[in-house]
Length: 175
Image 1 (cartoon, rainbow, N blue to C red):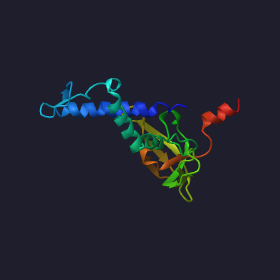
Image 2 (tube, rainbow, N blue to C red; image 1 turned 90 degrees about the horizontal axis):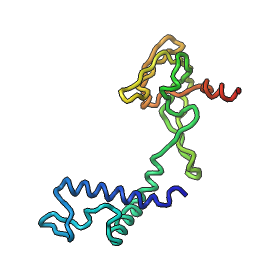
Image 3 (cartoon, rainbow, N blue to C red; image 1 turned 180 degrees about the horizontal axis):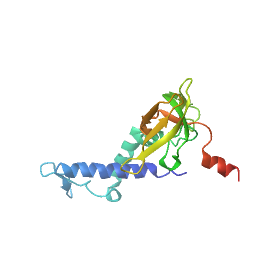
Image 4 (cartoon, one colour; image 1 turned 180 degrees about the vertical axis):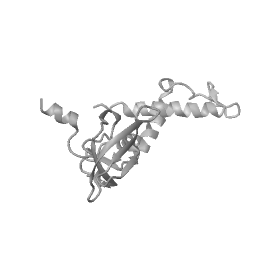
């Protein structure tokens, strides 16, 4: 199991963040706790904490159910509604409007997350231009629609999705 020591790693990260916050407030290490002089004996790396303080950190992480919340924050989307990427952009890539609405997740299947759905009666448009943002990610997509209109979209808005099979995947499947 990959998460066997995850709680301990999370407790260590939380402890490091606690130490940083304490240092910003003027606290430093001292062999015993001294509030008047802002000294704290737990201002040491996690591995040097005594067993009682280490247990407190672990209990705090467990009580917050932080590992569960972190797991729930990760979503590796697949299929046509996955976010558009810079690498797949090409002139003529077919896309459609997306409602931005999510189909509810299936709570009995943790791998089944909410997914985006095409807008009702959505037409297929074609990518005519795109640009990268300052970090090198897809920053904007320009689409020409059958009615002659041209619209600009930001991938984070999740208002576009692919139609059909991605050409790279289709080519790989035909070999």
